[in-house]
Image (tube, rainbow, N blue to C red):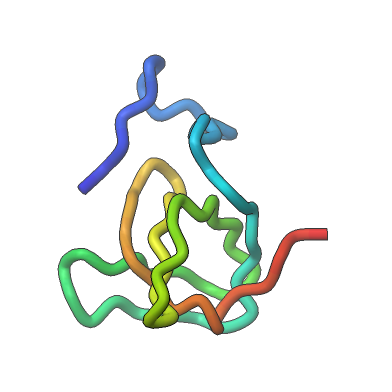
Length: 75
Protein backbone atom coordinates (compact mmCIF):
# COMPACT_ATOMS: atom_id res chain seq x y z
CA UNK A 1 0.00 0.00 0.00
CA UNK A 2 1.82 3.12 -1.21
CA UNK A 3 2.14 6.33 0.72
CA UNK A 4 1.48 9.23 -1.61
CA UNK A 5 3.35 12.43 -0.78
CA UNK A 6 1.85 15.86 -1.36
CA UNK A 7 3.87 16.20 -4.55
CA UNK A 8 3.73 13.11 -6.79
CA UNK A 9 6.49 10.71 -5.57
CA UNK A 10 9.38 13.12 -5.85
CA UNK A 11 12.86 11.55 -5.62
CA UNK A 12 14.24 12.13 -2.16
CA UNK A 13 10.81 12.36 -0.55
CA UNK A 14 11.02 11.57 3.17
CA UNK A 15 8.01 10.67 5.37
CA UNK A 16 7.44 13.19 8.17
CA UNK A 17 6.66 10.55 10.79
CA UNK A 18 9.65 8.18 10.51
CA UNK A 19 11.48 7.12 13.69
CA UNK A 20 14.77 5.92 12.20
CA UNK A 21 16.62 5.84 8.89
CA UNK A 22 18.22 2.44 8.19
CA UNK A 23 20.21 0.78 5.43
CA UNK A 24 19.75 -2.81 4.27
CA UNK A 25 22.67 -5.15 4.94
CA UNK A 26 21.07 -8.04 3.02
CA UNK A 27 18.64 -8.45 0.12
CA UNK A 28 15.07 -9.27 1.14
CA UNK A 29 12.35 -10.57 -1.16
CA UNK A 30 8.80 -10.20 0.15
CA UNK A 31 6.82 -13.41 0.73
CA UNK A 32 3.52 -11.61 1.33
CA UNK A 33 1.70 -8.66 -0.19
CA UNK A 34 2.18 -6.47 2.90
CA UNK A 35 5.97 -6.92 2.97
CA UNK A 36 8.67 -4.67 1.53
CA UNK A 37 11.27 -6.05 -0.91
CA UNK A 38 14.69 -4.40 -1.05
CA UNK A 39 18.31 -4.97 -1.96
CA UNK A 40 21.47 -4.55 0.06
CA UNK A 41 22.31 -0.84 0.59
CA UNK A 42 18.67 0.28 0.12
CA UNK A 43 17.65 3.10 2.47
CA UNK A 44 14.41 2.55 4.41
CA UNK A 45 12.59 4.95 6.73
CA UNK A 46 11.25 3.04 9.75
CA UNK A 47 7.70 3.95 10.80
CA UNK A 48 7.19 1.33 13.52
CA UNK A 49 9.19 -1.41 15.29
CA UNK A 50 7.07 -4.41 16.29
CA UNK A 51 8.09 -6.63 19.21
CA UNK A 52 8.15 -9.71 16.97
CA UNK A 53 11.17 -8.37 15.02
CA UNK A 54 9.17 -7.19 12.00
CA UNK A 55 9.35 -3.48 11.31
CA UNK A 56 7.15 -1.27 9.18
CA UNK A 57 8.92 1.11 6.84
CA UNK A 58 8.72 3.11 3.65
CA UNK A 59 11.06 3.04 0.68
CA UNK A 60 10.48 4.83 -2.63
CA UNK A 61 6.92 5.70 -1.57
CA UNK A 62 6.02 2.05 -0.81
CA UNK A 63 5.12 0.97 2.72
CA UNK A 64 5.55 -2.57 4.02
CA UNK A 65 6.83 -4.90 6.71
CA UNK A 66 10.40 -6.20 6.74
CA UNK A 67 12.69 -8.11 9.13
CA UNK A 68 14.48 -5.68 11.42
CA UNK A 69 17.60 -7.86 11.51
CA UNK A 70 18.18 -7.21 7.77
CA UNK A 71 19.02 -3.55 8.37
CA UNK A 72 21.31 -1.34 10.45
CA UNK A 73 21.10 2.34 11.39
CA UNK A 74 22.44 4.82 8.85
CA UNK A 75 25.57 6.57 10.01
